Length: 423
Image (cartoon, rainbow, N blue to C red; front, side, top):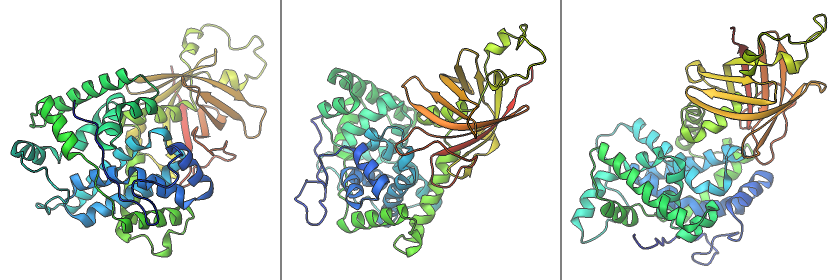
């Protein structure tokens, strides 16, 4: 295995070299502090910690350094907008890697240039084999890395792109070091096989050398880092119109945010969030097994919500953060409410189980749903014949139960409408 990478980071003015601000705090606490108080130093610490990795991704895909800097800044502005809904803030680095790749890819596609300036990152001297391999890898490496299953992608990003030791990765993932080493080995092989299918055929040893030598962090210019922090604070304070954010970055940020919403139901790593959204409103296959039994003992008695909600419901409308997903993205979404308090959520061939509780006595009526990791989403619902409408907040820091059926911009609020499936 290659030696543990150790990449330099450009310090912020007034700091000792290599000493990021608030370095005693982990990503979760820094993100929560920024969300709660718009603390510039907390966000600066995140830029200091993850900026070089993000810059490395942007420069690998974009030869023009101005475009790379725009993509870098847009990546962190996306973080500002999504700060409340990052699923696992303690793994912010891999999350930022995915956003940085999609942002830089968007810039590259929009530019439609046939030729780019030579990459700013210095090439490894004296090894023409690695140099040739790097030229072949640099355009596809992050794309294929982003497509790996999270259990392999996350350790690879933390170890190779963020320069953490295997012990640090093990602590961050709360698993034994042996598990990290195993996932790194399997992840490298899966990445190699993906590259082979793209026409790049490195050996495992050469891939390790390229990762260690070429997929390194790029120093972030102090002016760019400080400008990014300033833009983040202004965005969080809803003062983006002040002119501190370049128009190209603002447009790029908005485009990436929209693309993230539209692709949410297609990205494997985000399927759990999408399923949680679907789950909030649905029905149960148990009803099919009980179809021959009377719903209530007294036919004259109006059925309760606990009975009316049972069955299978198809998702017909999905909105999050004030943006609506197109119908083709959600046409296969459905949920099944069971009489035993269990929920089955389906999206195509994917399926997940949850538990749910209703409180129809509240106004508006309330519900809660809990996944297998004990994460609970709080929401409200209404039943109108064969239509079920639900509105809930994703289980992220600072998210409260909604009080109205609306999904507003830059909030972790999801609004969904379901129709009962007929037998």
